Length: 332
Image 1: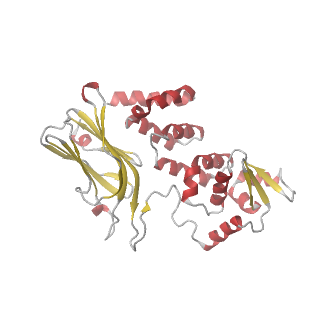
Image 2: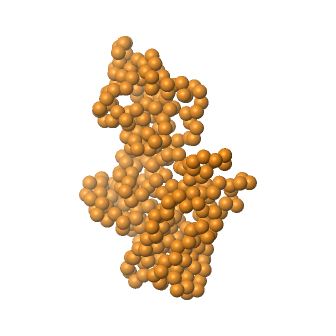
Image 3: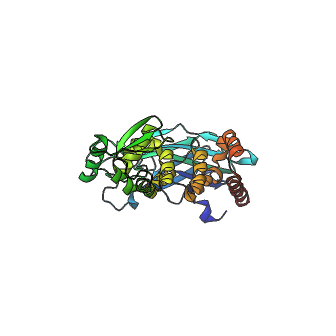
């Protein structure tokens, strides 16, 4: 391993892994900076009788006089790869920990380690406190621009939808209906515009059936189209919204879903996201899922689920997965 590689930390949007090949006794090592969220971060390891791990942000790298201090929630573990065995030592989840210096988070691993090991840290969330006080807010907006619905015109469009002002089309979801406005729907989707020009032309009472969406997901879709969607309704319906965005050619919604799904890949959702990345032709999401599973070794944490996934995945996707696995073995 070259000196440059020895200090490099590999990352995805929320995951960082530092691979260390043999740390001698009484040795201190500090990683190169790695980017997660707004900050450059550092990991350091110190080995004597125990292994001491520290995590800290580089606040001086931010172009502000009073840079925001991260309030982080994360999972951190050490994976030992000695003599062909894979052992995992896990720290209890850290929730809403303010991190400003290398002394704010220190983990002493009591078990002596030798040979290769990986320091693995997965950020669940990072918040910052508003400069004028108030509740800390997550830096990850779920693919939405903060303050998106604060303009007066957008707020009025949302009111038109929520209060049913002068509506002229009904959206029938799988478990309910919502009234909306033809002009707005037609302006947001070329597929829906075509429906109004052909299938529904001349009808005074038009209806669009979206039977593959629940009423709540459909409401989130309409609120997005009206510019009035909130993070708490967008996040739980991202996959339904991705399907609708693809079906009705709402390209900005598809981009927003794609960006959001990249932000919080974890062992619970990675296989479902990998499948959807293949179905909806999202190469960046697919690459991130494969990176998370293979290079970052999360495939070991979900072996049973992965076996079941392989039984129903399409051949082309399976071939891509095995190409990644073979490539990782060659490079290790």
